[in-house]
Length: 189
Image (cartoon, rainbow, N blue to C red; front, side):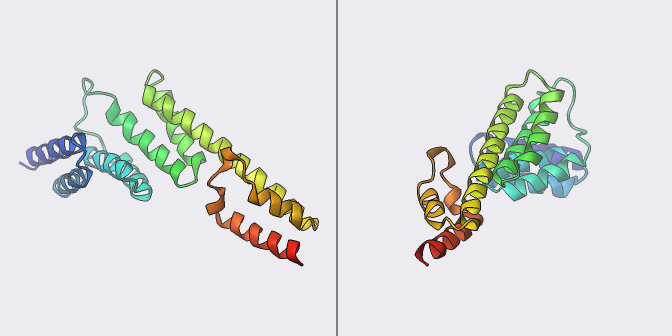
């Protein structure tokens, strides 16, 4: 029957994921989706596999698809991670996509549903830290832009060259590079 095939594929996908074979887990999850596309469980297994492979867009997309489906295979005696884990992984993926606000909403939903769940707590904590760093980076770049706008290219250039350790990684942002070019042009003119 299709349900037996779905359960078999889902079990194989979960087993592959536990063994660290995430590509194979994805293949089995896709096969399960092909059998019964209206059930959420295979989408959540795919969400986890995409998260562990670092494919943040796909992680979020499959979580949203799965969220719209009914988790008909889940019963009361099954572990809560079927509900919490994909939600928190999608939340963390949002954080990795530089949209921690969206991720924090999902993580807080998970924590509200399961207040004792450590994964949900960890997700909320991490996303709050990402959000704080995002605010600090924005303030740092705003200050550099202020210096440039006021004609202090030397201060902005020095500031952009000596990025504080907690803000490392800002150099890869397009706004940083644009400000660096403006500061260099103002400083050398």
